[in-house]
Amino acid sequence: MSEIYAALRDYFASAGTFDEHEEDGWVAAPGHGSNGAWLLVGQAYDARDAAAIYGVVPERVPADRRAAMAELLTRINFGLILGNFELDLDDGEIRFKASLAGGAPTRDELTPLVVTVHAQLDRWLPALTAVADGDAPAVTFARQLAPQ
View 1 (cartoon, rainbow, N blue to C red):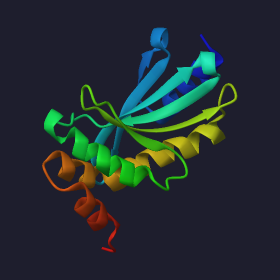
View 2 (view 1 turned 180 degrees about the vertical axis):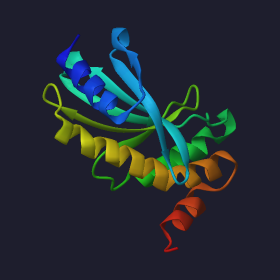
View 3 (view 1 turned 45 degrees about the vertical axis):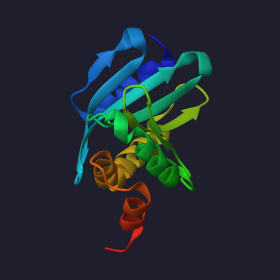
């Protein structure tokens, strides 16, 4: 077992129920916020001496809405300091990724990554859903930024 995977496994184990996929170098647990739910994944990248935390949105973006979603995610990603949204143009998967390099991460290094993934997904999930359902990306983005 790699040190990076072990660190991720230990972190996820301390938070509760999780699934192990040691052969592929990842662990997963349910994630949720006030705006919905997602899959929280910790991935070890041993060859790169790095680890990543992903929040994977369970619903796929329909093929005819992927260009609009790519526009929304580009607008959201511009200016983000830690992490970024990703869109798989082939299958419509959306995920948010926060990562670090430098060997096995400590709990103190993983916590801000996990917090960031949860915060960004919870903040933007309504906009992601709206654009997947047909709303215009620029209008949706502006509406999400407007004071509530």
